[in-house]
Image (cartoon, rainbow over all chains, first blue to last red; front, top):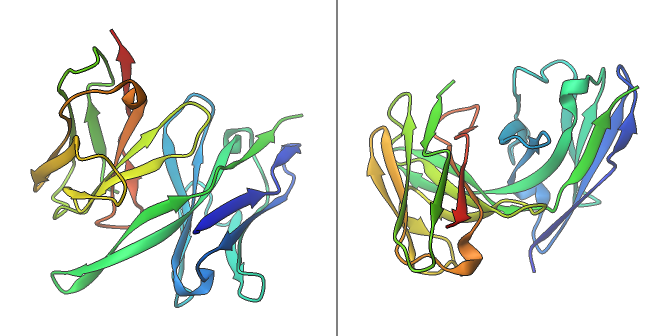
Length: 124
Length: 107
């Protein structure tokens, strides 16, 4: 069974750091497009970051320079290192696997499997 | 960034009703659109991708259509388990962006 389990959330003071983990089972993280998506309390979904199978990474402008996405192939785990945290980073953080299909000369990636999420609260 | 505008933001419907939710992109996205269902306290669940392709295991009462900038999610006969919030998301370009959500409530 394909499964994603996030961990590492918690309460942190503004300016602090936290590392989120996303343990995968049933598939290989390094062979897939993997994303982090967050949801602030009572708000909608916001994409945060992605790492492609080839290793390329991209970030939302709101976290660029503060967050780093990475993976450990030996542990089949995705990470999100979050530094210089702000109150507006408070959210449930989900990891998601990307599937793709080919069309019109390129690949299209969509998120098919999501973890249950881990809660990050940034507050003094 | 591509902006995704969903409407309505909420609706009230009865079991058995036909429900339609629309999503408009700020530019053409070539059917690179997914629909998700989210229940309170739960992770989003993929319903459709490529605008109209049903994800495995999703009931056939869910369908999607559209092209260019305008897309629609239709629930043909609303069931009790369908009361939730629905999000559209474009994956045509990075960053992928979500609509604001449509909350489907019981009338």
